[in-house]
Image (tube, rainbow, N blue to C red):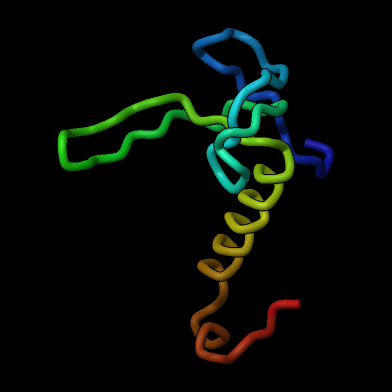
Length: 90
């Protein structure tokens, strides 16, 4: 990868890796249709059982999710002697 976020995951329901017009499942207004990419399956338990669906997100939300995942990964990989020291996020 060249440092860019990979938006080429194949959507198993549509068999394509291009954005589709749909709803962002992450941070946008769920009623707004916009270009979104498949980010994976979602399964969640609730009062009447498990609900499963393909999840989509807009590129802006995918970038934010990626940044959050990378920050968490970096934090988990910190050496123990540094983990107890406070750190500042810009």
